[in-house]
Length: 291
Ligand SMILES: C[S@@+](CC[C@H](N)C(=O)[O-])C[C@H]1O[C@@H](n2cnc3c(N)ncnc32)[C@H](O)[C@@H]1O
Image (cartoon, rainbow, N blue to C red; front, top):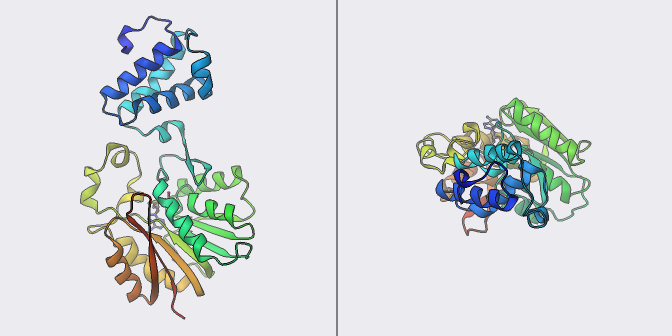
């Protein structure tokens, strides 16, 4: 059933089917799931309401609201951006036009950092460079009850969003956020420094899925001609802000481990290993400041 087949007051079930059909036609990978999430969001319903109220008739304004969201998804805006939220490390993050849509792959950094911390009750200091929504830092603070952290982003709007996430999730007293150019000008030293910097080679950006190329901010993606510009700028800064014996954990793009290792080693950092994501891609590099 398509939208054009609907009566002015269709049932919830009919609307759901028509939404699925529109999304399938637009080439969306998961039309059933996305239709369900968007209908729930548009109508303020829980998942079970879609079954319980399947025969409920919707008013024309309700139908309009549903198809407003479905139209955006059919134009390949991600569901997370339409909903304005994304789950990361089982926590709920608000996102906006200034922030990357947090990816499950990035949870690999949180796992790697936790594996490097021998005592989860320690009063560690954590620095997250290019914090976006604040997801990496706040996920770690959730696991390390006495840790404190600073998140830095070049975009003022991302800093405000990360700060709002910290407050809503109950971390305001342990997390601070600041606008800055990576770690330039920082005088503090940290036990753990993390970053998921932009690492897509500039020329590859137009070839990415429209959900990414047209909706993630360019500052979160563009890594320069070979994708490695941010690592070159970050390596000496990380060496300067790590405490002796402190650890770093960096996300990398597929196939970037050798180049990033070389860049970090040239700045005097010691690379101890890598960690794979669920897709078996070497997704992060970790190591420490030289003794
Ligand atoms: C790949 S996104 C990662 C966002 C978030 N940490 C995450 O994993 O979802 C890279 C982030 O680096 C920020 N960024 C880019 N250049 C920067 C710079 N010179 N200084 C600080 N942050 C920067 C971008 O604004 C973006 O938020």
